Image (cartoon, rainbow, N blue to C red):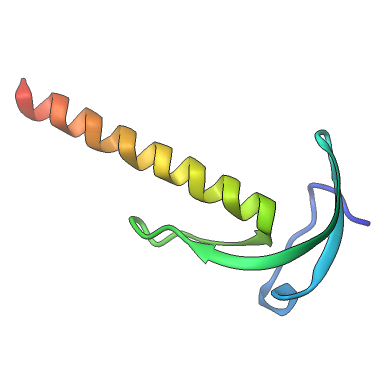
Length: 74
């Protein structure tokens, strides 16, 4: 079992781990690699963490677009 401070590397991709966080224990989480299609940032971690990474990036980049549109209208 590992905690939030585990550093995953490319050698971990495809393995399964049990992770304990403040939210609970995630049993047999697959370690995956993903990246943001907009900025190219890469993330290696559990599938649950990767989903959060992608959701946060989507939200961030959508906000960037909104702010750019507001700025261009001014």
